[in-house]
Image 1: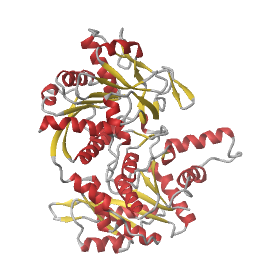
Image 2: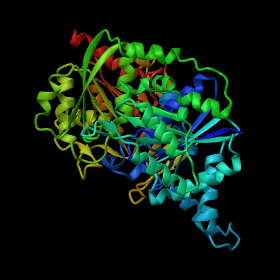
Image 3: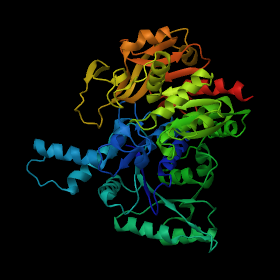
Length: 535
């Protein structure tokens, strides 16, 4: 049976609970333990798939097609372990499951209630696979006091009683605000947050205190006394220089040692890989500027995995990367992209910002600027070609409205393993895209083959529109190469423009599988292609 670590948040949202869990998972792995990380999201959406990126940030997609919170991306990147649909749950999924069981008569005429039916469903999710790993880390989204999170807190209270005090701990991530006028960190908000937890029958074992400043001894003593937490378990989580420093910082502050003490873990961590990674990150040999032309650039969390994939490539190539986030609707877009060494056109939905992205693609193609198009970015490279090379001024995607030249069109069916998936225009929007990991066959003697070094790959997808194969022959005559295809040759996965030194676009999302210790070849290739231009 696994040991359990439950992580809650207090005082404020956006404190970095997900990063804390991911870093703790990496530290426990460094001690030789196997870990699994899970996210419990209290919102009533079944998943974040239909949410606006400005509200939720990036939607992370697992290999098995689950649309999940971006924290699962942190979990994967820090532990190098693939998450699954069994590692993400929402109130919407829990209630949907319980109601479906009630409709089938599974509860044998009982009155269905939050306790025990909802809480039992949550506990079943938490316990799933507990015989397969040493430690399961469960993060509760939101903040203590959120009304929709109450069933999750009650479930944790129950499961902690069932497990026994030696088999679970609770880490409470909180904020110590600094008041400049008083010149000190204030502990009272954390005290109130812990009091709110205690009214739910939960007591934290470890306080992880986020702060812009070091925590004075007096403040630690006060927090330990008033929050009923051991002094050595009041951990300072001061801002780090970069997120990959966090495991080292938390180890230095004693977070993993506090967990080790609670669980009787004697192995010491081997942090040499993290130390070497940070050394490479802090000692670049050159610098490049990469422009990301997107429609959600005001919120960086909307491109969290993309942002990190670029960083991973910089670490691998020992290159400092200046990321220029360029709004696709910016009137000075052309002037801004002229100052970069390479361009990325990321994914997105809807017609807003399309003209700006196409303008950027056109500039990169004609001026030999290295370009990587992702998902919608690949579709727009084809639309740009049709408009400028074929003279089809109305070439477009059916996603953006009616067009006489649907260069990109809605998918109606595709293969998922041995099963055929079918979709109709009137289907629900939630969970109906081509989601998850699918195989791709790469053509030899192409840029894609040079980057990957093999002909068979697996990549994660999240889209419902595809490049129309009706235009394939015409594109090939214009020196566009369909270098990656689905195994049945029906769906284009990678397209290149062969006269260009580095012009490649993919239908999948390579950023989702990039890791700090295993950067994605499309991003490392882009960074390498940018180096001569900046030197």
